[in-house]
Length: 151
Image (cartoon, rainbow, N blue to C red):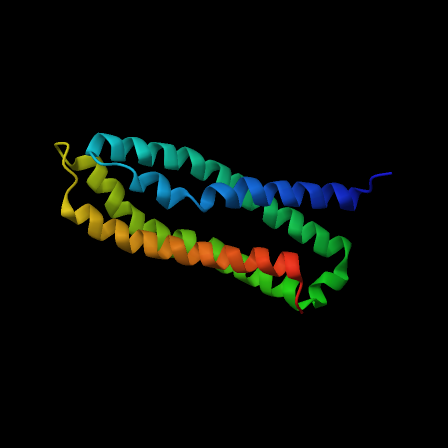
């Protein structure tokens, strides 16, 4: 018989795949654009993929907390608490770090005329991608903690 806890674990794992998987390639998708039209299309695809990241990430947090409340000993496990704290840090990076750095990129995409990608885009996107890569490193650490449960 399958228990409610096992159902939550399965939802948690699928949420990680749905949320983190696309999140790891968000920067790759937009790096393929060679013209402004391609770049705008890449960002449109990226925005659609980001929906999966948000839904999966939300389910990941909710199911992770449900598992913690169902099994309170998890809150005494270093790997669980560290993962939760890192997840909240990564979650906070969206509005605090990523959004302010993506707004100038979006404004440039909306206002620039012509097909040639301006140098300003490369400068702005480099900064944005640096923070996105940092978030990805945090997620890799979280995944390693979940798998290895080292402490």
